[in-house]
Amino acid sequence: MTIIRDDNPHRNNDDSSCRPPSGTTYLTIGQDLFSIQEYVTSLYNKNLHEGSNSPLSSFTPAAVMVYTSLFSIENGTSLPFDYGSGIEYADGLLNDLFRDQHVGLQIGLMLEGSEGCDKINNGLVDDQIKLLAQYLESSTASRIFLRVGYEFDNPSFGFSDNPDSYVSAFRRIVTAVKLELSNSQRRHDVARVFFVWHSWAAPMSNKFTLMDFYPGDEYVDWIGVSIFQQVYSGSAIGTVEHVKGVLDFAYLHNKPTMIAESSPFGGFAKTDPWDNWYEKVLNIVNEYDISLWSYINCDWESQRERRGLGFGESRISANDEISNRWRKDVIGDTSRFLGAGSLLDCGGGIGDKISMRRGDWGLAMTTPVQGHGEWSTMRELVFCSTGMFVVAGLILAIAMKRMLMSRGRNNYTHYETMPIVTFKRSESMNIFDLNKGQKLLSRFREVYGSGSFYHTMLQ
Image (cartoon, rainbow, N blue to C red; front, side, top):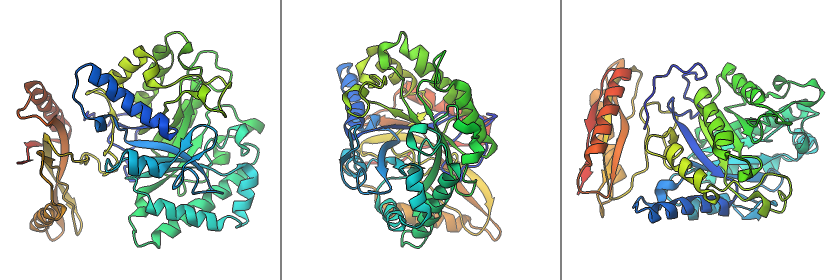
């Protein structure tokens, strides 16, 4: 966990929409089941060959991405379906491949262009919207990011000449889904689903602007952008300036940003693909403090709908140089990118919760935070030793007791918990990791004024 002072000019300090702490980014991998599986298993395989004993789950991303259509919502979500670019199957990813790993879900929701939007606006698809809300409620994803009519400005998707119809459809879907979720028995689902407005980041037709397609702040939680060819010099379809234009728009509207789709167009056939694409994308992530990065890890040429379009090969495992740099700069120990479990407590500022695994030891920092109101919350971070189970009720009881003891008449004190380092199935602390933890503690105290180490181990 990297702690960075929140002085980035592109970051507004509002975490109500699941924005991660400044200087960190949720890593998301797509876009079909087998490509996502290949991403995780190939990295695990490479590490095993190099003598590492990191568990398979340590390569699981924070979220996975899938696609579905509002007009057949079960396809790609509760049922496997191939739209032409591999099997889409959200439940297969969440409940089988990454079961109990607290993975989030990023969904590209197809609206079938202006014709589909007209049907939505005329109330002909209300039953489908209800089915969508029911699926979102039933999903086991830790958090869900719904890209409604993604790449609205991409001419091939049929929205780009009719912004009014698109805006009305976006608003109708968001309003109906929120109402459905708010009436459900699981009221927290309203805060578990976030609506994403996603731009293609390329020149628009008919002199339209982003504002022409914008549904409004009350309907949009996140703003997304695609990055494919824009970072290449001489790109004929969109440039870095188009990407930055969307990100600047998001900042002006105080919205968290995501790179909603990305892949090095042309694959690895270009010279120096890391420097020419990945490094440039990472520079954008750092400059704009991007909150979520979705990377499409696939062999585009093997997919019937993408074959011959020039996308090429983007599987990390297909190029040794890319694989090595990725493991160092994207999923390495000092990387900004967050993996599985990081979305469990998103929007919680410095008190990030991580998934618990038996056999892990660890350290965490706690700091008392003064506030005002009727109640506070207590977040405990527990590292378990092999063979033990943490009883959630016991943790909750301890949390409630501490909360009530600290509750004042008009103010309260609660304790924020920050993970520092974990020691995977180890019997002793590694001095390098301990030193790293001490350095992070010093940074923490510089930024937040106080903090201490906290070590819990059950045997």
